[in-house]
Image (tube, rainbow, N blue to C red; front, top):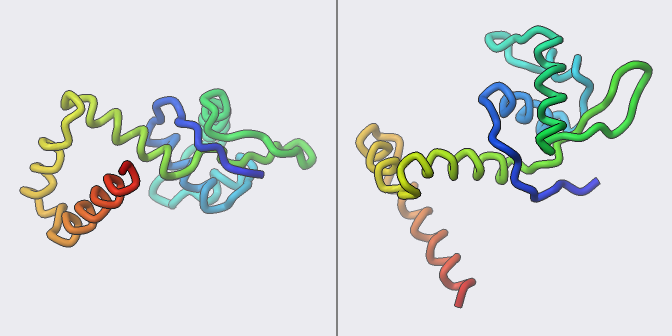
Length: 131
């Protein structure tokens, strides 16, 4: 099944974590998702169930089949689109400008010259595609 390029609704941190598990596993039951969570981020089964159903309503996952009583889910939003939506939401807090975010990243040491060179290359490639 092909993955959707649709942009999901806003995702919570825990919903994103569950999606990360599903991206890794490709398809999984709620129990498998719960068991694949890191030991320091264990969540009750019913909480995972509620969040997976919420992700389904948001259009981020879908049921693919049923095995016994267990529904099997797969992600239908790509990691790139999910992360892109979160970054767009973050930038909206700053009026759409990336400058305050990048300035903070540079000051905190999270943005390197190599990162800037890769970013510059990506911008040049995008501009060339536009032309």
